[in-house]
Picture 1 (cartoon, rainbow, N blue to C red):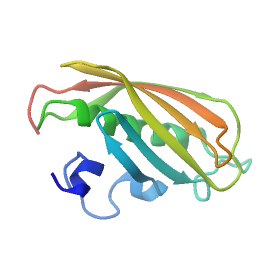
Picture 2 (picture 1 turned 90 degrees about the horizontal axis):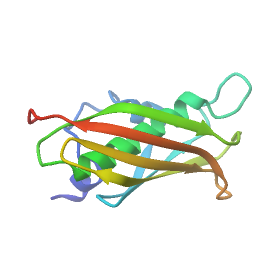
Picture 3 (picture 1 turned 60 degrees about the horizontal axis):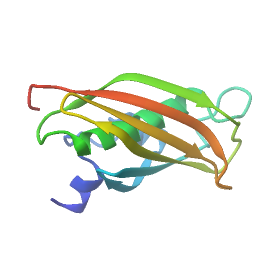
Picture 4 (picture 1 turned 90 degrees about the vertical axis):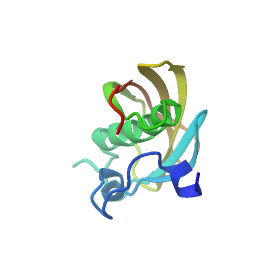
Length: 138
């Protein structure tokens, strides 16, 4: 498996067509045990100048889905089933880092815990994502 496949277990898509690219999400580590990605606050703010909660949710679903995909049977796609986010503190600038760690990986579902922190290491968001693994190969 190439390094790019290890960082992104999903089928290739045209450049700029994925939400991750539009939000500036960059995966920096990916394994079945842990997925880590960063995202800039700039370009992802709500009207009060803070990181948008939806951007946090998108980051959480991106890293959580990758963790689920890395734990799924080869060729079987995973899709989000439920996402829950608690936003603990606002972030005005810099970048945030998300760490996704599986808490359950089964044949048909995976549940992933995601923590998002600011550049000072303070937790800004905690999320939980449950994904379903589809029976039909991709």
